[in-house]
Image (tube, rainbow, N blue to C red; front, side, top):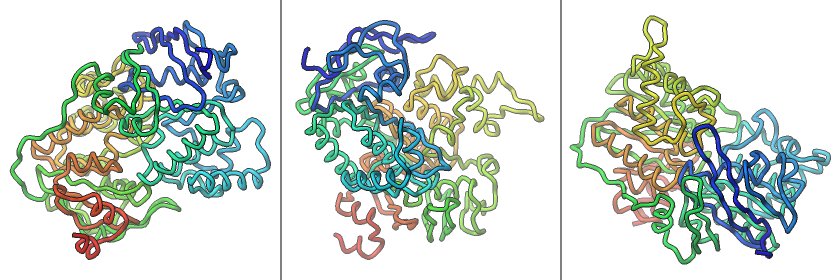
Length: 506
């Protein structure tokens, strides 16, 4: 098609043991938002990395605005007018927002001028950001804004967005969509990757669907149901998570008046957080990023010390115990940040399985690692949670985001926790993998574990939670039965209307 901004023809890329892209062809038109859909491991990341100059294809061609296009590196892609917002942020924690953005520019202006431009763009596009903040102190949602603004400052012709809304609130998503529509009206083409299919239906006019590295379908998302798109992605029908009935058990985790300063300079202090979870129960904790979720996980896992008397596990005060001692007693955590916190990027899956499973899976004896057992544990995670990877010797960073998430969640669930606390369990995970993770959490509860799910995905929390509480500015609302909660009530709880106001919302 002559009116394509980017025309892709026959792109193929193979790695040892896996064909990532096989004869991929499609067009992206100017002034359009084009969705790229597929399960984790379907080949989306390899394809966009090829467009952005990070990967050299084995075969196939691309043309950009009618000219041959084969960027040898991202710098060449940016010079040609192609920008990309990655799912895993590439930012330096010790530098400011403005300094990080300057590093991504070929010829940055003086920092004062750049800061003014950042402030202007962030105002224009409703993405609030202080250019002088240190990136290490930003929430995930704020880091996402840094990446988006960095791209917008390049005035691109094609903007690639990989899971751009996974860390944004519904209000921020609305603002971002207004931004993207405005950019589309200005002639920009946007290649949009997301597992949130209802978002795709609202925003995109065209969709290309990959499965196993091949293009298997194209559709108009505005005329195709989310379920139908999900079934095109997986090549089969989609199961809705369901749980076996469970008898209510005794309280396993009891948190009373948990208050603690944040270890981060711009973090959120916890203020009198109180809740309890019983065996067989799923407690959902909702909230917008940056309201104390990370601090709550650090306090419960033992990575952050708290005053005595606030956290009890099976009746025992555990506030002074280290993470390993809490793990030994059955309290396990899976943090939000997969790469770097939940998994060591350069270590193999076997080594990563050992890091958290050492005690409960008895993977070491008298100071010596039992590598055979560790490898067996990693293989079990890969098999039981359908992790797409060449094998347990693969480095964690080689996995797609969704596959690493399945590995991290599977690693904790297979250790048979008595309490599992998980933050953003299905962030950036495709529909079928998200359903599988939710099912695994429900199964764990059915087996008698107490499960706490911290998530920004309200649909997810309503689907799997028995009770729901909202975290706002470090305070937790009283937990209420999830069944029957209205969107308005949830909105009030998320907005910090604790106690009385929510009661009056009936």
